[in-house]
Length: 314
Ligand SMILES: Cc1ncc(COP(=O)(O)O)c(C=O)c1O
Image (tube, rainbow, N blue to C red):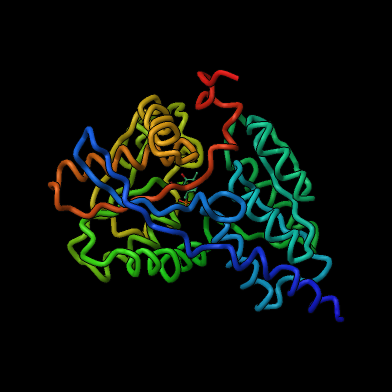
């Protein structure tokens, strides 16, 4: 069998697991509210970022930008790095992830376990340092391929044509509101565009950490909702048909995430709790019949060393 055929059949298993995630109603009895959550935590590497990793690498292969000796290089605080490491490994490419030295130990272990190279940089968590490092690597080595999650329009297009369409197929009636946080802005812009086109009255809302509500024009400060709000408004968000934003405090996001673990049995990360708080607020504001959709973005296991698990008894 030719190498490319071997690699293709090997990668089929994991590629087939990306996306097609369930959308489930969450009934909050005490609040007498129901919201709808798309379970992106069920993607094979545990987050919504598997979608970007799959589409950007398959597109690069199709365009002839990836060769057997290519090195996929991306700066990521976690989920994208893990997703690219997983998809890159199964497609047979070398992957190099640039990550802030402040990133949690479990993320580093997963990336290394998937066979990727990890380059830690010291920058007080600033993304720009890693992005500049990746550009420098590409300038000095022709084998380097940059997925560029923060600028690549494929990021938004994939959510518009895949994630957004899945939501529209899974929700039988009109959608009154869609709310989620943003890192690159690809999910919010892409799903927002798909939903707005089908249901023009739907409200497309950005969830923001209250401690760093950039869309609200408030000063950046530290927050604990990992995976969202990296300290700047990403360019992909310019294409989002936004109707407003909802601010969620980190402590409240963690409390809701623990509720999702203990009351609903959904082991998700902190941004999922934050999204659910914002969705409940919309459901309350729009009335009991409103259909409000949000996302559970990733799994809890990558937060063992964070405050989310600080109160857990061993
Ligand atoms: C953990 C996590 N990963 C990824 C995303 C989506 O980010 P992006 O804006 O890059 O599509 C979110 C958004 O809420 C998130 O919470």
